[in-house]
Length: 71
Image (cartoon, rainbow, N blue to C red):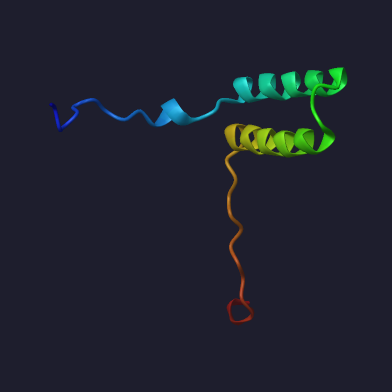
């Protein structure tokens, strides 16, 4: 039995790409049009997919918090 694995972890292996997420959103829209999914489930899934899409397509920067004593 081998304890140590010599393979490397690939960071990109678990990430969603924008194209895959956009296809998933399109498929979800089609399910909604056909009436295969309940409205509440649709909203939850759509919200999660939009977050994934934004995460895959943008690089957000945090705004620096200014305090009164710094002005």
